[in-house]
Image (tube, rainbow over all chains, first blue to last red):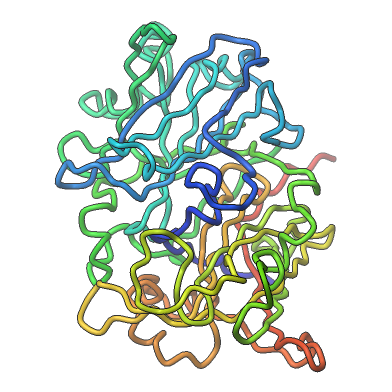
Length: 195
Length: 233
């Protein structure tokens, strides 16, 4: 006997007190937050910052982004994820409703390259009101040009859309930052994947 | 670690479902690029039992300040499984919902209905080794929203699951049988296939109903299954 999949439904506008309570100031514990790698994690500590932009180019204030990434050696965590962990956690979650510019901000480390890939990347999932199904994308790094050029996934993406998957590095006084804006529509629409 | 079967898009909504107006400017418009079979999609976060704290699975008690929440107590049972009926054990289920009056605790909810000081409306539970889960809550009320004139969301509970891999992530909503608003709701109707969307409706269960305490509902959740492991002989 086979069973049909349970349909996806939108996360809606009111997810914060269930999914991101700490960030939004609700009295409930978090299972994940914007810290993907704590201070004790090995690897290059970086910040990932971006906005989610709708079809009119307006920042979305009620999106939630999740990221799932490998550690500095390119290995996905198989031990339980915990926000008490001061080292590498692997999972991050951030809403866009608490920053004045509706940005998501993650503190993490640059991942190593996983065994079946040629370039390092971070898995990104986008949820929001107005999406009945979440969307998957990937964040690659602009300072990995040679590795990116060998990446079959990036190379399978039309050349004029490849840039939508590549985060731009800026070295700031508080460490390296990568900017990764997610365009839901328009001529810069981010490439989303059928994972 | 084998990969997962492709998503069955016949069970899901399109990204642009114009009757649900917010999709029009927010859903991707270009075809998705295929991506499957790698360890990145097959891996995913796991959580310890300790991620679910004492009262997290009982929304009738986890928000109490000075009394009991108002409304109809219910208990929701279900099984998380894959498309072949195999249980999905030890997976985290996060839930959130409106209170009995149809009001969310969320700060931006402006609906003119009372907050309940003893009900937050969020919690979490974990499926057991057989994929079964249970949580207690108050039946949520319907509430109006701005999608169109006189638009009301049917009673629903939001659920978020990880499943065994990054690819199995699911955020969904559980509805209640016999709700007249279902036939008018663009979010429920956003799933074009009638049989698929009817899987979002829980079943009343007298067997799960607790004598003198709470009405029982059953809501089974089906995630994508793994591809078959190649046979060796």
